[in-house]
Image 1 (tube, rainbow, N blue to C red):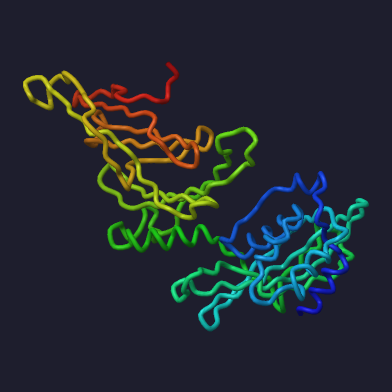
Image 2 (image 1 turned 180 degrees about the vertical axis):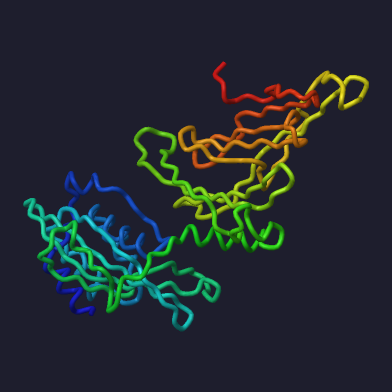
Length: 347
C-alpha cells in the first residue's frame, strides 16, 4: 500500500516551497482529535505549503524516503481540497486503527485539477499506556489512486469489503461517557418518557471568537436529563469544542439575602440583596434557545410557581455566562419576579 501511496503522491505533485496567493488563503487546521480531523489537517498543511507540519502527521512509516523527497514530490501543486467518508475502526494490541475513505482534488499552478481517491489508515496508541512524549493520532499508511469520478462523488463508500460502517460521533460518545461516570448513580434511571437516561438533546452552536477576521467555529451542546421531582426537573450540560474537547458546564448563581416583613416568608418582601455567588452543576426547568444562544432556567420554590428564581446564561467566547437573574420571593399567589442582576440589558 505504501508504494501505491507514493505513486499517487508523485502523480498529483502536490506543491512547491514558495507560497502562492491561493495557498496563503487556505485555512489553518491542526486538529488531532479524530482520524478524520488528522487527514483534513494534513491537507491544510499541504495547501499552505507547511511541509514540516504535514510530515509530522505521519508515524514511523513516512510517505517518502526523506523530508526533502517529500517536499519535492509536491513541486507543482497549488492547493488541495479534501473530502472524507464514513470512518471505521478496530482495536488491536493496545491501539485503535481507523480507516478513513478519502477523495482529494489537487490543483496545480496552471489551474488544472485532478481527482484522487482511496483510504488512509490511522493509529491511536492507548493514551493510558504511553510514556512521554505523548503520541496523538497519526497516519500509519495511505493509498490514493487517480479517479475518473467528479470530486463531489469520488469518496469511496468504505475501506475494505462490506457496507460502510456507521460514523461515530466522538464528541457525543465522550459526553455520554462523562455523564454516566459522574451521574449514572445519582440521576433517575429513566426520563419522563420512560427512556433510559444518558441520551442527550444536542445542539450545534456556530460562532466566531473575538475579532472579525477569525474563522467560524462550532461548539456542541449536550443536555442530559437528570431527575424529576414534583414540579422541578434538573438537567446536566456538557459542551464540546475543538480546543477544549468535552467538558461539563458549571453555572454561576447569586446567593441571596431576602428580608421579609416581620421575618415571615408569607409576608411582604422588604428587600433582596446579592451577598455572593456559587456554582451549580445542574439547572432546574432549563432549556437552550438557539436563536438567542441562551440557556434559561426557572426553579419553582413551590408547585404553583408564585415564588421562584430564574437565570439566563448567554453563550459568548465559547462559554455560557450568567447575564440575568430574576427572583420572585413573595408567596402571594401571583407571578411577579424582580430582576436582581442584569448584564443583559444595555444601560
